[in-house]
Image (tube, rainbow, N blue to C red):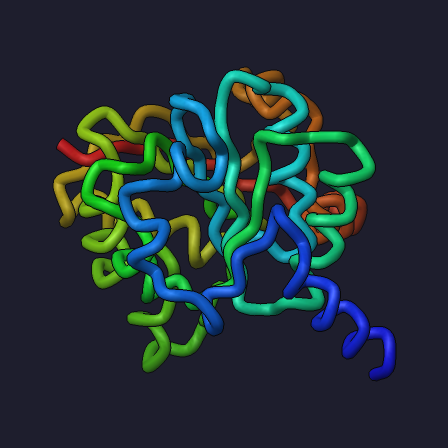
Amino acid sequence: MRKKLIRFQEIESRENIINGDNIDPALFKGKWRDTFFKNTNPIVLELGCGRGEYTVGLASEFPDKNFLGVDVKGDRIWFGSTSAIEKGLKNVGFLRTQIQLLEDFFEAGEISEIWITFPDPRPKARDAKRRLTSPRFLKLYKKILSTEGVIHLKTDNTPLYEYTLEVLNDFQAKVVAHTDDLYNSILVNEHLGIQTRFEKSFFEKGFNIKYLKFYFN
């Protein structure tokens, strides 16, 4: 508990973390490139980023893009922030807020790409609207994505993968690529060996990793 409290205190003073609870979203909405990243590069979000392994991994591979990990858990974000600082990465940051509030922080078309990595599958039918690939959230993503923006989903959960394919069909989204076994598919090299802690754990236990890439018509 003491370590968590120390991390919460530290995230308030870190330049690569924005605590959405303590700041006016209008200070950044439509201004992330100028105010936060101080460049004109495209912005990529990782939603439910946890400890930020994917956010930091992608930022390391693509210095010509800006990466922003979004999560409500401050103690998790602390790990990603620390990793980015240790690696000297200036193109990565973290936003502590709830995903349903994204529209408060981002202007229409401000985001070029979204990664959803190993989200809670919310298996109960009554929780379907809380799944990060439900129509409720897809409508939100569509608002903040550029017209050519793409979304990636990685999950070990077969029902969530199949649910998402069904929803995307009804939503008239265009699926660019998908596989129910990423590491035995031709798409594996596109992921550059980057793994979240959850992905590594599930893969070592024998779970197939599912992957989807899509955009809105």
